[in-house]
Amino acid sequence: AIPAETEEQRQEREAKQAALLEQQRQQLAVHRQSAQERAELEQIRRRRINYLAYGWLGIITGGLLAASGIYYLTAKVASERELADQATTSSELDAAAEKVKSARTTGIAVTALGGVALGVGTLLVLVAPKLPRPQPTIQTASGLSLDRFPLAAPTAGGAALRWGGRF
Image (cartoon, rainbow, N blue to C red; front, side, top):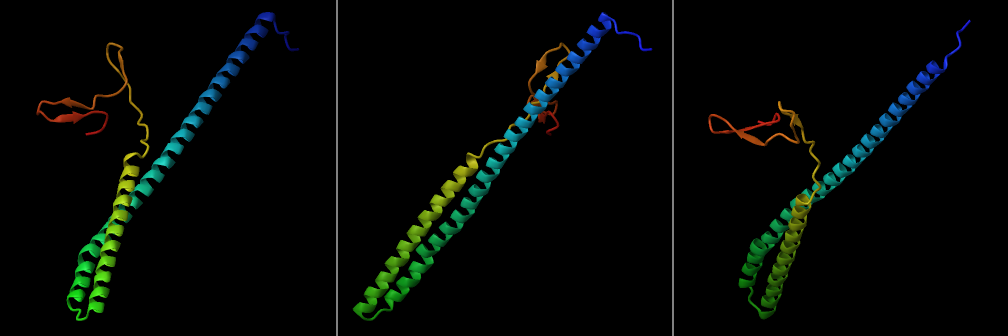
């Protein structure tokens, strides 16, 4: 036969169950918070990737457009001017002058568009969200807790030694 549980044993069993339940609640809360922090970090990472991708795309596209615009402002306009110099009639001269003006306007517009794209791309790269870096903590011999390692410390040779595994 199973001996009957005393009141003291029942209270002890209930206290253990309550402590186990509280521990499980705390673990669940920590897990929820950890999952939420990971989701927020992933969202920041995605935003950063988008900013950097569009920023570098803008920089590359802007550079190509600016180079094309400069080509139009130099080589194309010079080529059209050479053709204008060879014109013999006033109608040929007017048509050649119109081509020079058109090439110059196209060059200015394309160069300006390239400059804008370069500026926007650079701005996107500069304002891309930064990923949070975990700050290591250290415990000193006196029990003092420091939030992070010093970035550098002087050494005997006069060079700066970087701490935290970053040399």
